[in-house]
Structures are given as C-alpha cells and as structure tokens.
Image (tube, rainbow, N blue to C red; front, side):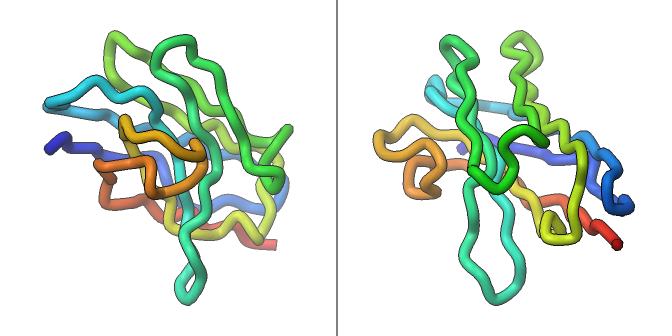
Amino acid sequence: QAQLVESGGGSAQTGGSLRLSCVAYRFTYRPNYMAWFRQVPGKEREGVAAIAAGDSSAVYADSVKGRFTISLDSAEMTVYLQMDSLKPEDTAMYYCAAGWRGGGVLSDGRYVDWGQGTQVTVSS
C-alpha cells in the first residue's frame, strides 16, 4: 500500500491563497491518476481536482474551476494544489489520493490510496 503525506494546509482570508503538497511513497502499482478531494463534517467527500500521471491533463470540479490548479512532479512523485481566490466555502479537510481503477476521475471509487488529510480554513 502506498503512503501519501499531505502538507500546506492552514488558515487564509477570503481572496487569499494556499498551496497544498502531497508526497507519495512506496507505490506497488503505477497510478494513472492522482487527485485532491475535500470533506466537511456531515457531508460527502467531494472531488476537487485530478491529474493524469501520463500526460498531466487536469480535471476540476466546477466549484473550483479557474481558482485552483493541480500539478504533478512525476520525478518527485509529488502532487500540488494551488488554491487562489479562496472562499469560506473552501473550508474543509483536503485529502490526496492515488489510484488506477476506471470510472470518473473525480469519483472516490477510482482511488485506492489516501493521505491523512490537511485542514484548510478560510475566514471571511
């Protein structure tokens, strides 16, 4: 089982920026996608952004399109999420994920390995 370690969460004001990082270790398979999800207590986990390991093509949830940017350093096996123009509704625990299954790239069923999460809090 791979290990994914997130960092970079914290607090920001509305309109501010944060950059999340996720370093992945000990893959026993070649992931075809890596992604960021977020979850607020009492709500379902939401796919935020996903990136293809092969060509770095990216997919975003409508709620973050134009504000968030996902990127991948394949050599370092690190995936980033640059979050700009933050809003209070972006407040959540953010999780990094990696996987090889089929299905929607923003669907959590595609992913087999998950990080522990990093909290992002945006104040108005």
